[in-house]
Length: 218
Image 1 (spheres, helix red, strand yellow):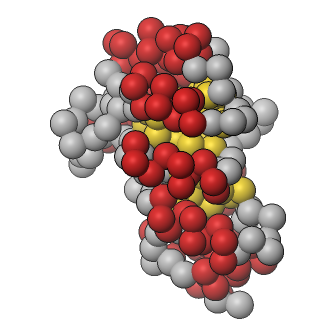
Image 2 (cartoon, rainbow, N blue to C red; image 1 turned 60 degrees about the vertical axis):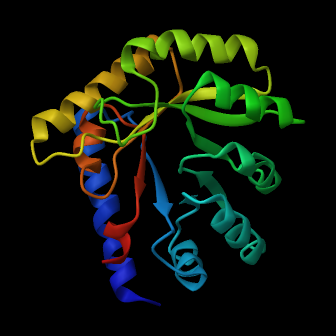
């Protein structure tokens, strides 16, 4: 067993515990291990260490990984930008959760091709950065409701954001707090925010699902 991997996972779990207890003893946080940085053997090692939820940002990689590891009862999450020409391939993998529905148009395109319900999150561009996908915060509640109403096979479980790309912690915190407010306004179940560099802050701002990659492997 890779002792560095064990040590990193232990440290992240400790960080999660410390942060979530500052929110509430009842606040539960799910760790999604991002696997684009690693190989299938490392995923198997993480499984042996107790990790079950894994996230891929490319559909092609999700397809191949889920096939290679189909002997393990893994919970796959799709966390990347979804192109419409990849929707059918994504559906075939039957992911546990799709984090990146970023428009009504994409939701409708996915819904049209689904034969059974799929759990999804609405991606919020909470920092307003042009490089990031997602809906504008001021439009999010309306778009969330429209998708709920018009896409009967999209099971919209909550919201996702990527924190502001900044050295200024206040800006990152603001982007998380903005998303947390939308999470509350939509009476949602999942608030997915926080990655390797900012997951502790995200949890303190109310995240209940974090997506961690490089911190697991470095």
